[in-house]
Image 1 (spheres, rainbow, N blue to C red):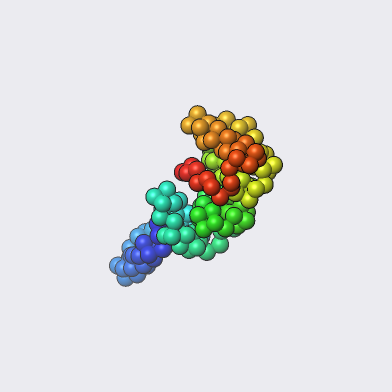
Image 2: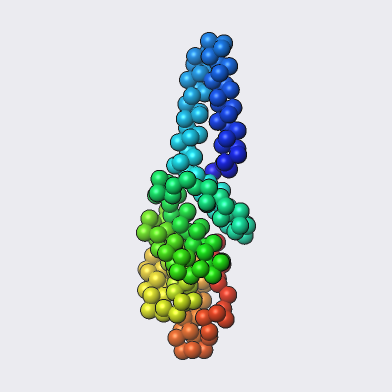
Length: 187
């Protein structure tokens, strides 16, 4: 959750504590410093900067969020929840760059790893439906919308679900062009 510079400073502080505690023969403090340093290294690979990146996405700072997600050394080593947020965040960034195939792949990966809440699963399904609408793959969009309906979710998401369903109907009837509608913000 901390950015890489703060992590580096904490590891450096831990190393200073370790050296000072060895010089002063305070071995309990040495053990604490080693454990703190080991945890910071472990947390870097396990959690990376995904939470911080998602906060940036919510604040609409997509460029800095993208840089934070790129700082993740190996997304495959993240835990299940962090992988979901990593791929979800990358999907949001890719859709903002109009890279629809990549966005669909990222959202699909997020869906595959499973979100921590039912509401997040619904939002990921709605995001996938929205990408499919842009790509004019209306049958896939229907499947994702039906999946989103099937999951028990909070009532506020029903408004977004209804809006996307009505857009899908208009798109199928050719009353609306795929590029003519703005993406619905779900975060």
